[in-house]
Image 1 (spheres, protein in one colour):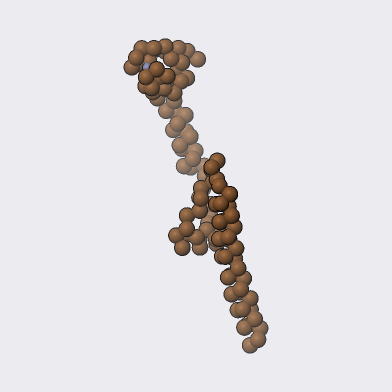
Image 2 (spheres, rainbow, N blue to C red):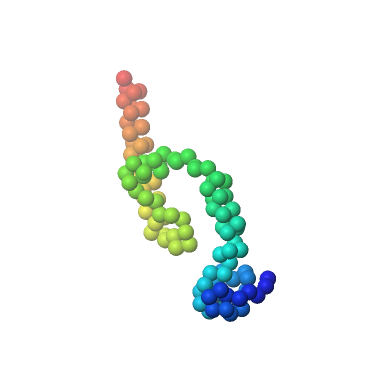
Length: 106
Ligand SMILES: [Zn+2]
């Protein structure tokens, strides 16, 4: 860790600082592109797209956007998700049951 002079205001700033605390001029922009690039590459290549489940396909079909998991995830969202799962699973079970019943009675 070294002190360098800010390009904008000339103050001494830690070379590890992201930006000059005095003027906000980005300091590490020239030193950290490698890190930023490797992180971006990892996020692009290392994660293959997961296969969507039946529920996700259905929600995609009806245009429902599931709330993205994050620190501000609300309980309302998970309750709503539970209801969505319930109302998706229940008709499928009912339809399957009726279909099986009709198939058996023939
Ligand atoms: Zn500065």
